[in-house]
Image 1 (tube, rainbow, N blue to C red):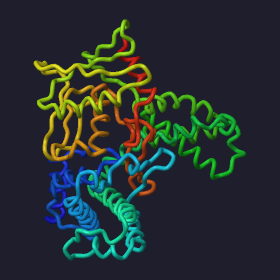
Image 2: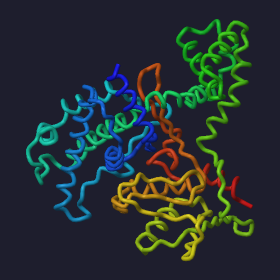
Image 3: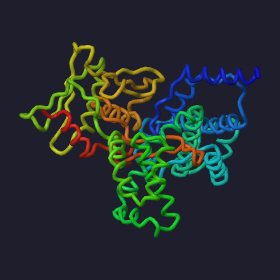
Image 4: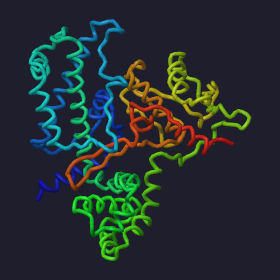
Length: 412
């Protein structure tokens, strides 16, 4: 009994001290390392699974240390980088990333079985890391990227695992049922002719209909009961129409600006220019970093965004700060404090993308990616609603929909 109380106390202590770490779906290994170092530790002994995860993480860390060692002897233009627009993964809503302990373990086993022996001996070895690459550089980068991506999902699993129960509650916002129904041009015909459908189709539609009901704020048990009644009464089209409204609102919340700034200037006599006051940074290096990324990204056609740098700015003026080891963030939607990691080099692709993305939050845009724990498959599920969208994916860019939303909210 005493042991159980210790375990319960440890778990409660964890959640009192911590909050669910914010991580976009393509966070870099460096970002994962920062969060792992900051996680409060449970006082209970590690399980066999926990020990296995630590082993996976040690492999990933060793591979990164190897890259750092190689780069230490190279000029800047010849350094190896595992982060670029081309190397970013993508998890579209139609092909989500699904992960749990068993899936990740299988991924590590596949890499170990396929990677060239010369690389395996170093990453899974214990000898001093070599300065040289035992394969050609293209082959080296190819395999180190695979190791790095598997390290990242291993780190993500460790970070998310304590929050499994909490994240299972987020499943109510899953948009896949809504999209399946919305994109099915024959949906009303299928629902009206329910008795003629094969069981596979019925099972998927049942899942989708139940999901849009939960998207609308209904409890799962009530949704299932009401759906069963609709099947008996042959009123599935009415059921669908009733809950697609709420499901659409749930979907729109991933894209729409709901928190508006009051210092944006976009006047009728200057329809192609949006201006936002910004506290003048302390160095010209940071000034160039801001202009080269924010003003470069936030433009569409003839329209552009201009940062109005102010030396004696007020306390509500947007500014950027650099804190060693910080997870990049903005203090809420339409917030004014952009926090970046002082340890991350400004030349890295991920750092540049992060600033462009975080500035979207300054304007009020939410993230358009999603992650939750699916109890039905005992795994975490994550996806990006649009892999071409700056607010969804590190592959993304500014789209017409961003311009249209800004115009709706800010154009006077």
